[in-house]
Image (cartoon, rainbow, N blue to C red; front, top):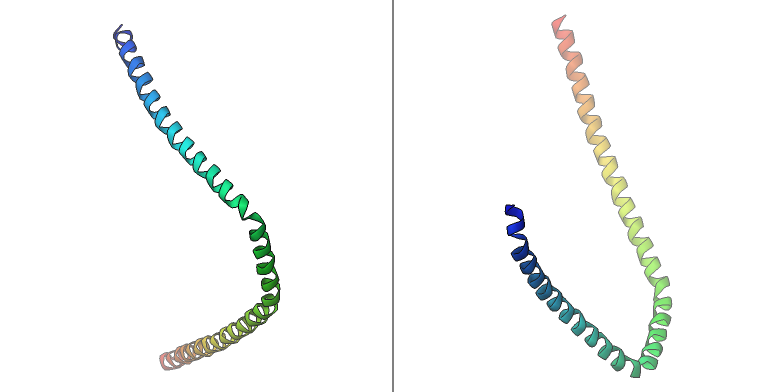
Length: 113
């Protein structure tokens, strides 16, 4: 019985809160849509100029692409050379450590005998 007593007030409160939230959300979305429509109207006038500018940018990009590829290739080659040098250094260090530790083990075994 106690659940039925609060049903009417809860329903009324939910209706009011839902209406307020829905109204605010609708107003925000409507204002965004209006702003987007205005931007479209403004941009339609300069659409042809944008197409010409886009073609120019594309032509410049194609011209610069070869230079960028060569630069990227050289950069990668330099990085590979650095990595190879670092790998060789680490191998030498590990070889020295392994060689030293194996000699120490051999010395300690010969001293124990």
